[in-house]
Structures are given as structure tokens and as C-alpha cells.
Length: 201
Length: 251
Image (tube, each protein chain N blue to C red):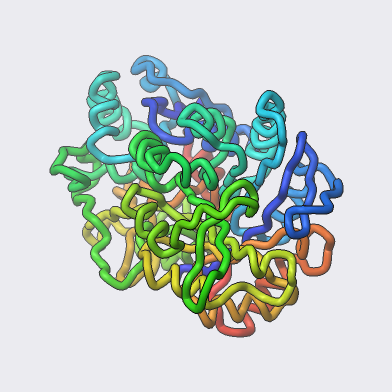
């Protein structure tokens, strides 16, 4: 069972719909016990970094996510990817979950349309098991105004938007983060979710 | 590189797809859930449902359409039409919409944009605008499906909505809508120059070249069409292939 962490943020039903469509067993939950018992964890999220961290703290989920993400496949999506990092700078500096070294900062590009909204093409970097088997020209759907600042060794894929915008990060072990929305990225996104489910032991 | 988006729009009344030409002469053409799946297969980058259900009581029908579509179609869904309150935003997003488009109500109550952006995030707040030319490089904003002139300057309005936190603008030209003579390029460019949020071009496309032209001549990041697609004159795939041949990035 995949635990989709329900902490009051964003369109969690889209992730649930996609997993149902793929016939992957999942459950929306904010119960630390259910997360501990799950085979994998997805942390979705849309919104702002500080409010997401506050919501996770209120539900006493910070520690359980930090611990469980070391033991089983963990995928953060969009804001759920951003809070993986050590620090965010949306509105105010705020500590994240610290699962992967790095921070989240405003996309700094005076000539670009912000938010970065729409389909952008993945450029691959380090090997990442959940990106296996994708077409060479793979577009995925983004909508965000903040982006990760992360070392190359954790960067699995990026897209070009004025600069290299991290699209998928990977700690080399169990933690994955997608800045895009796999649940809204058509067949490519469904394949990524399927790959993620395939990591369950 | 960010691809330009091709967005089919489905006008829905009482749970059925319709298309008004110049907002008149409405006729039924099908099941929205089925059509959304067809467009998804054709490569639609996003799907817009525009609810023109007259009675507020029947709005639940639209939410069912969204709910069913969201189980089968995994690209962004936008829902507009008749959105009046934060509760409408919430209900629509919970049904599975990714964005909510608000038009007349935003003009009458601009605070709705700010509140929705604060609560749900700018990314899901799309402001739809119907505008009409009044002089060279001057347009005014209309509401109620293009029937009521608010004597509100278009450029002033787009500045306001960007400040209030809108994440996107869907700009429909009343002059071009239904003419099939192409998108309203001067109006689109004026708005693209005025704001730094994404602008969707709407109204007027009648042939495949209109799509490449709007991306070559304006800063629009997406183009929306309704009747062209659902009367089968063009497929989304054909439009994308054509744009690719003009070196426009497409998914």
C-alpha cells in the first residue's frame, strides 16, 4: 500500500486517481501509524513552503516522514518535493524535512513568465530508477514559481527554463522528488508513477 | 524548453457539450467525459470545461463531469463558468479540477482573486476576460458572456488581476470570437506586454495557421479553441504537428 500523505495541501485526489487508474493500492492518510505501515510514501502538495511545513508539524508528521523515507520508496511531488530540502525561502526562511541537501528559492529570471507553467522537456542527468523506460522526448507538466537549488549529484533530471530548473531529484537510495506533476503529465507521468510502485519490495 | 500549449475548450450545459457561436445558436454535441478522453489521446495539453448551466442548482452536474474526467484523463483540467465564491473554488478543486477560471465575478468582486490565490495558491486561479476594441490599442472588459460592457480598460484590469495574485489569464476577444479569422493579435500582444503571468489566447481561430501565427507574433503561452476541435475540422494532433513544423516547441 502506498500512503498518500494528506496534510490539507493541494489536489491530493489527482494522485489518488492516477494510482487507482494504474491499479496501485493507495490510501490518503495523515496517520503516522499508517505511514509507518505503508510500503511506500507519496507526499503531494500545492501551496507555499512555510504553510506546508506548518501543516506537517501540526499533524506530527515531520519525524515519521524523516524516518520512514529512509526505509521505503518516498516520492515528493511539487511542493512535496520542495519540502524535501533543508531550507525554503518562500515568503520567509523556513526549515524543510532535510531529506536531501539543498534549498528552494524563487526562480530568478526577469524576462521569464512566472509561474513556470506548462509542459517542459526532461533532460536526464544522474541515473534514476523511476525515470527508466521513458521516451527520449519526454514532456512533463510544471506549475511553480520556486525551484530547488541542489548539487549535481542529486539531480536526476532538469528542464531548461532560462536556466536549468531541477525537475527530478534523487538521493541515490529511497528518496525521490518531482518538481513536476506526474499525476498530470499524461502517459509519461503515469509511467513514472508505475516505476515508483515497482520499487516496492 | 517550455512547450506552447494547445487547449481544447468544452462548453458544457447541464452535463452536455455545447458550443455557442458568438454566444448564440447553441446545440448539443456530446458527452464531455468522452470528448475529454478523445482530446487527451490527440495530445491536448490541458482541457477546459466551461460551464454555461443556467441554473445554479444544477451546478452539481458539472462537478460530476469533472470528477469522472479526473479519473480517466491525466492532464490538467480547468473549470470555469459561474464561479462566484471561495466555496465554488473549493468544490471545483475537490472534484478534481487543477485550475478554476473566474470571469464576470472577478470583475464585480476582485477580492475573490486575492482570496482564492491566498487559500488555494495562484497556480489554480485563472482569470478569464472577454474584451472588445473601442479604439486603436484600447479595449474594454465585458461580463456576462460578452453582453455587458463594464467600461473597464483591459490593460488596467490585467495589471490589477496580476497584483491580486492570478496565476494565468485566458483572454477572449469578442471581436474575433466566432469569426474564424484568426486570434486578435494586437490585443493579445498588448496584454502579454503588460503582465508577466501566462496568457492563453482565445477566440477567432479558424485555420491551422492561426495557431502558429499567434505563437510567432505574440507572447501567448497557450492557444484555446472549441468548435474547431469538436466539429472535427482539426485535431489537436494536427495543430501540434503544424506548429512543430514552424519550430514552435510542442509536447
